[in-house]
Length: 131
Image (cartoon, rainbow, N blue to C red; front, side, top):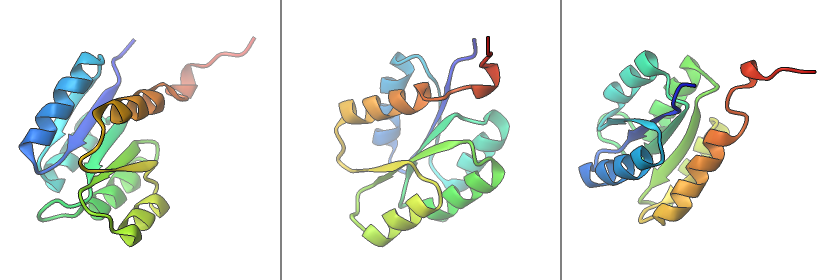
């Protein structure tokens, strides 16, 4: 069975490295991007199952990246990360299809639990068989 694919999008290299290490040990194929253009290239070329997406990224903000991910494939799950508490942006992200958000600094164990839950939940309905 194919490994689940996780894309981490954050302009802060320390956060990307931390999350890459944590989720590689969880057994996921992990990808990283520092900006929107790189993130969208990875989405199109590797179709991640889940994206951890920072809300504030120079050049193309998280909401724009989220819109384009959902236009490409509505089935890709997205969890937003933000260092800011902008409720209007969080609400808009939810309206656009983000599952949840984490405020930085986040608890890495809570993040791991959320990702594992989303990756295991209805992961591949096409493989389900009836009796």
